[in-house]
Image (cartoon, rainbow, N blue to C red; front, side, top):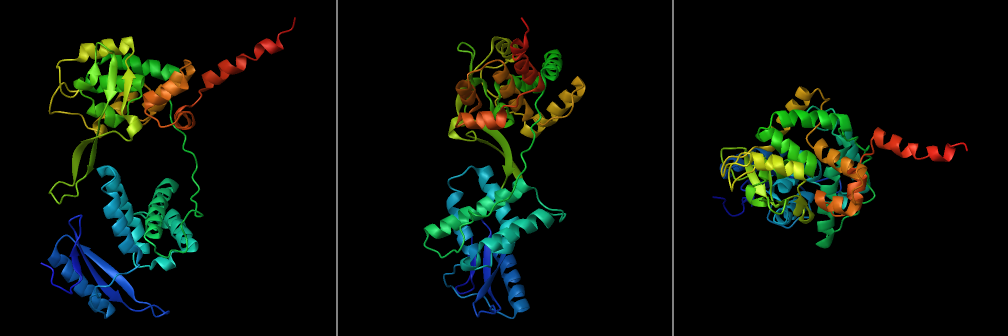
Length: 376
């Protein structure tokens, strides 16, 4: 049990935190350091070691405008408003890349130059191997820093830079979309081997479901009479922060966003496949079981195997969703309807991120110009 004045605290995430005084800066300002442990005893030992190293003592119990203090306040608030997987993502970014650099800095020292320098360092030499992080990861880190600064400003703290002027340049990633011939080859293989995995791949290919959504799909979510699928849940493996022996656990939660809760009509051909696969009135659709499910990573691995057995070049599972969107546009789908089927908030997301005109479609459109070249 922590004693009064020791400056060792039990955090809401279950860990223990100790604070100590570091040598004063050149400007004469007090600087603080932090240590963390799974137990009070471990934290106390680390705190004692840190205090000896810096020739200091445990920090007095005073309010501080250190970045770490505000960051933890922000995290304790935001974790109650986000999905568990999102909270875990923020936690990992904070403790792996943000707090080691920002943590002991007073908020008044967080300038745009400081933030840009941090981003550049992560791009050049960040990560476990020191070979640099991807621009996407650095942009995510910067987004978390901005959120913390915004929280600090809302609390009346003095921060010289809100981070809006700091940018991480990202190159658009090309998304693999199956061609029509590849889709036909894959479909033939899936039809010939209609096991639980291949049925799941077919459903995603012709409805645009995400991998977590197909793994969480239950027969109670499917109406054979109405020919609809109601997407209500997603299944994913997340880090277990409860302190249990297992490092991860399976979580079945609501989908990615409010728009992702949606009803999708089932094409006639796919309805026949689902009817033939159905062995139970309730439980997980893919396994026909109330308790047994298929994990997203397993589905992803089986998709790779299906591509290989079909003689198709590799692609990730999310390519099925992009392929579905692209085929729908080629077939003349109403964009608003497609956007709602995919569970997007706006049609701009659908068109800018999920629709990829194929070379075949470009050729077809260009051939429409031929009539203008006709000679009488």
